[in-house]
Structures are given as C-alpha cells and as structure tokens.
Amino acid sequence: MADYSVQNKKAWEYNAYEFWLEHSGTPIERAKMDMENPTKMLRRYADYFDAYAGVKVANICGSCGKKAVPLAILGAEVTVFDISEDNKKYALETAAAANVDINFEVCDILDINTDKYGNYFDVVFMEGGVLHYFHNIDEFMSIMYSLLKDGGKMICSDFHPFTKISDILNFEQPAMSYFSTDIFEGEMAHARFFEKKIREQMPKCVYRKYTISEIINSVINSGFILKGFDEHPAWTNEKIPGEFTVTAIK
Image (cartoon, rainbow, N blue to C red; front, side, top):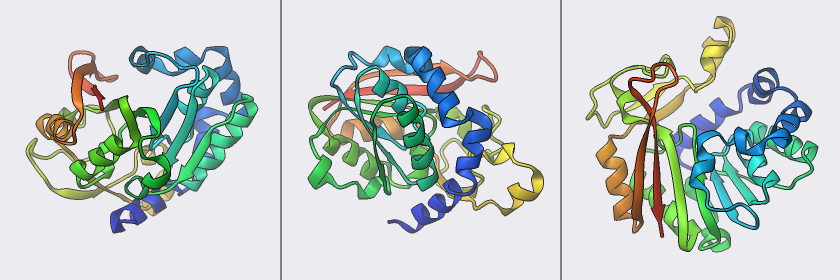
C-alpha cells in the first residue's frame, strides 16, 4: 500500500460509520429507500448502464455502498473495492437489510488482486470523487482496464477539473492553478460536517487533482476506446460544470 494510501485510509476510517448513521440513516432505513426505488438512488448514473441482471460490476471506491446496494437490488453482481473497514461495515449491513448480497474488498485500489479479478468484470464503475486520491492516473487507469472483460465498459464519474481553480462544490478545499501538478494535503470530503473540535483532529487526505486532458489522455493511453465525455452542472450553481462522466470500452 502506498504511503499516501495509508494516510487516506486513516482519514476514511475516522468516525466514518457514525457519519453514515447520522447522514444516511441506519442501514435498515437506508435499505428501505434503496428498495423503494433503486434506479432513483443511482441518480444520473442509471443512464450509463445498459443492463443490470447478472452484470458483474466493480464499484471502485464504493464507499458505504450507496450505489452498490441499489445495483444489487436491480440484479447486478457487485464487488466494492474500498479502503475503509467502516465503509464495509455500513455497506454490508445495508445490503443484508435489503436482502441482497454484495462482495466488499477492503484494499488499496492499486493493490487489487488482478490474478483473481483480472478480466472479470462487465462494468467498472466509480462516482463521487475518486481520481484525486491517486497520484499516478496512468497506473490507476491501467488497473481499471485490467479488471474488465474484453468489450467491458468503464463508467468514471468524478468532480470536474474546474474545481482545481475554484471551490465550486463548497468542499472548502484550496484552489490552485488549473495546470498544477502539486500533491497537497486537504480535509476528507465529510470533514466540513463535523463540529470544529472533531474536525481539527481528523486525519487529512493527500490529493492530486487532474486536468481534463490528463484524464482523457490517460483513458486512451491505457488502451480504452473512449465513447463519451459528459459534463454535468454543479449542484451549487447550474451555470458551471461540477462533475463529468467518462465512458470507455475495453
């Protein structure tokens, strides 16, 4: 595990289970919402899936299972890869409450067992801000490529690179040059929801943010066939981009 991954793991296991209980409800409450309308719980990402039943999905940095459980309810065979044991606990309890099974591998994404999972998945899916946790995007994309079967699809949704130059999404993270390649320490995504005393004690994450060209070129150079690059409005201001979704085929 990379040194920066060790630090990120500490951040993502700091009161994470308690955070999900407070902000997403108990696993039983969350499962009820997932079962009532799993497609709605997938939000815009549902538009990028061609099918669900029997589809093997790798949910990269799948966090507390907020998308893995709805996918499983819809019939997908989901494996979550995430660095946090607390996230695993909440995800598996929610899946059990929803009467579905998900597989959850706690690991550094760069250390995924490709002997076991290489050429295994029909879809590799990630959302909610993933790329900035990895300091070598080419290494990350090559692993995504290796996980997919021939003809498999990658759905990569992330924060728009415009967030490098402005705190568009109100994450209270520093702005920088759009073309900066700096690695920097910053609070994990949920820190702003904690009271000041706890927030000051929380471990920091170590980030590297990318430009649009770095992301697209990495997808292409890893061997993928780029199928689309969609930009989505920020939830804070619909006039500016806040997220994007890349789709690509192996």
